[in-house]
Image (cartoon, rainbow, N blue to C red; front, side, top):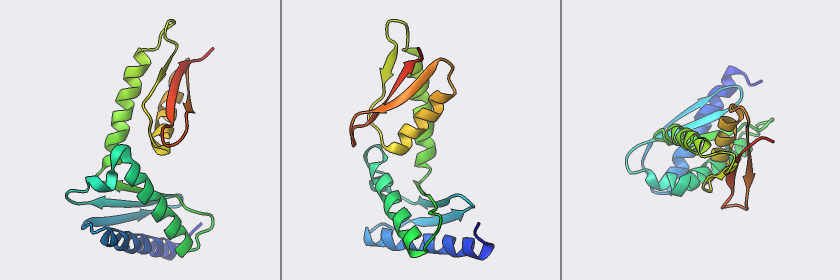
Length: 158
């Protein structure tokens, strides 16, 4: 487990590296970083940041991947710490949207229609769907298809 001084260093480097990356992209934004024992978070806020999110959050997923690799490599973190990047609370809004979608689609499952397919989505969003379905009795979920068009199928058990 990292010491308090290591957490401070990780937080500082996360903020500095995120600022540098955004500057290279020509984006002006406010960056806040948080670190706990399991996770590094970079929260980006500002105006006109839709480009950082991209279609279905694809740009945000890419930004998160780049930051995760760079921060873990630069700081030689062992074990590797996951990095979560959010832009203007988009991830929370998307989770609420996914929750509504799952609830709606579950209502469409019947004996005549034992499964439903959700639209393609990035891995982190599919994981959210799987976690939501896990709490539903008599239902299961699985990912299907090939990237970048992988999607979740929700179906009755048995």
